[in-house]
Image 1 (cartoon, rainbow, N blue to C red):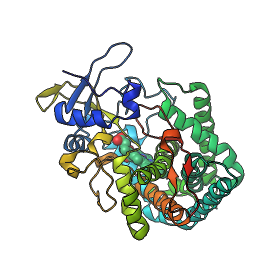
Image 2: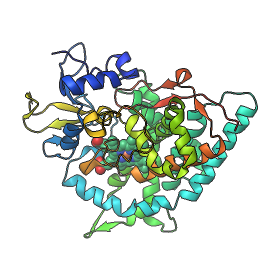
Image 3: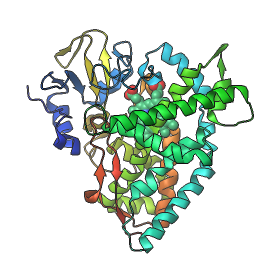
Image 4: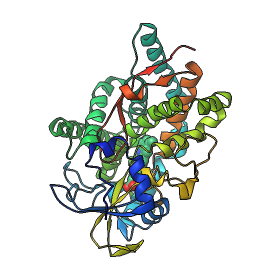
Length: 406
Ligand code: HEM
């Protein structure tokens, strides 16, 4: 059997979409044998298969980690967080967190996010006026989720200079870690410092009720008499920062690369900016920040005449599922800002459906509304940009932009 799901191949990582299309047609259950230092795993690439698998945690468990590496849990020296737990423990924890991390709390941030976005646009404009080719990702997309996370978690202005490198260290491990070129030592140092900072913040919030941030809400939240432990809160802070920064930043940057490639679609959005909130899901469908994460089979599973034995890592290839013609029609590979992709897998589905999806969508909506209003013809120079070289995420490191005049 030909093997075409090969995230170890740098060419595959650069443009996985042609391989995904072949896999969906010919090898929807692909087996990657162990060898040459690479682990054994499987990959599901069709929408319907990934959809069913992530909604069946009794068969496809998250409790052995989310990558194809066998021993990832504990590599950062921290216990598993809700994303690496199965129901019913995960359901209880998520229920408690959900009482504090509500869509309303996110919506309350709107004005502050908008003011920050405008300030960032000012910086881009100024640099372009000074003759520079500004970096859209570094100067605009990446700072937005860092600002929102710091704001949500109650990190005061005076301490944000430390917070930004912690986020960068953590996402470096997350995106390039385990095997590629990341400096694991400085990454782990950043994680250690961040966890220390949030441990102190949790202790402080338990004794002082004068704050109105998410950590304060988490320490007081209660469900059926149960409360969150320090570790539950710390683990949640960790997953928020790990899962909510580069993913959101890359969504914003990808929106501009996709609009640069499809000028007619840009015209539709410029003529009808009320389409921006729903177009955010379409950008994410086509360029899913999280391309693939693993589950582990708890029993033998037979699918399309292939049997995956119990105990095997199986990649849920969200990036492929989201371009499946069987779900999204013959133009699944094309941007269509009028599409309403209500059912897609960029935020997964089932028990682990992204708890930060409201926050991500709000940030991207505000960023695009303001950026397209200020610079309707802005282009992204993807060929001059640089991506994280990751097995699991599709994320920019830098992305120069042009045409910042009206
Ligand atoms: C475009 C941006 C984002 C994308 C593409 C994204 C994607 C995802 C995906 C695919 C999962 C499921 C993981 C799995 O399959 O096991 C997930 C879970 C999660 N996400 Fe996001 N995410 C984004 C933004 C955010 C933000 C902004 C936050 C928080 C502020 C966040 C917090 C979380 C948490 C805590 C979970 C774990 C939920 C659970 O296990 O019950 N994410 N996200």
